[in-house]
Image 1 (tube, helix red, strand yellow):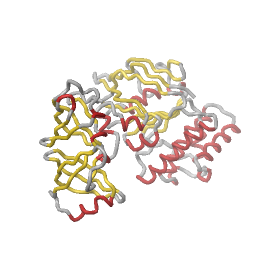
Image 2 (cartoon, helix red, strand yellow):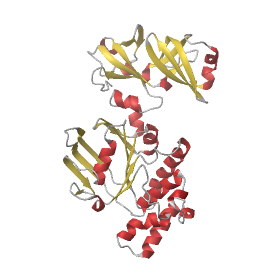
Image 3 (cartoon, one colour):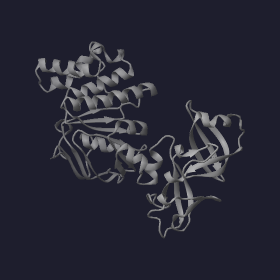
Image 4 (cartoon, one colour):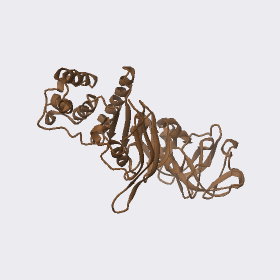
Length: 372
């Protein structure tokens, strides 16, 4: 396969709107890279620029060490799977898979071999004689992936391919695509994959590395675990994780001795004071819901603060507890057995939230950059 390198890539439309701002990124040979971000962050625009479906205003794009800025899409060695699958309705599944190979003049025997190999990998050999109208959404998605596989491209591009599926099928297809990438690697044909999604669950479960985008600018590129545990700024911290991290305005005491959440003083342990010497004043305080408890007794370096119950969301094996510390709203994620007593408590009931301050994040109030 091939590495993909973007060097100071920009996209400016004729009306002057700049969608992509100097993006530089290297996608390693055989890597599964995910572009993630909210709607309008330019993730699909970047993907289309790699595919050759969108022109590049400035910068250099290389695939396999070759500059491809001026190359048409068909000469870039890529295969793309679209959100709507784009299957030919008048062709059987076999012919949909084989169509591109026939146009290239490939011998029939090799076409047949490639089609059946892809169908076997995707467990859809029984679908080869059907037409697209006879397929379910998940089956159509597999055909679209198979059409990319038979081309044996240098790079696979996926543009939100699961967004039209229901939640259960999306989860199943996440597993299938991840296993497909690993299978190709084990067979000695590692596939470089660039996958676009707005769903951070897809990003976290599928990507070997994730590129988080906001308004055409890269916010952070790292492994899923690193993004979750060490976000570079408040945007990444709030975007990665479900439910999202609690990020609230706070006042930092001198040298990070404590923060004030409204009128509530919360001392910080020494492990969270590194780099805070000489700092004080407005900051953003971040704490993930799983680091807030409602157990009767605090554990470890947790700090108990009084809170007023707003409501509790029962999710089966866990409960999301929403409460206010003064005027500051916080969400706790706790095991169901710890929250049983909350079921009978009315709105406004006072409870103790235990903040594991050793897991807290502090961000600059203006820029949002992590102060760790």
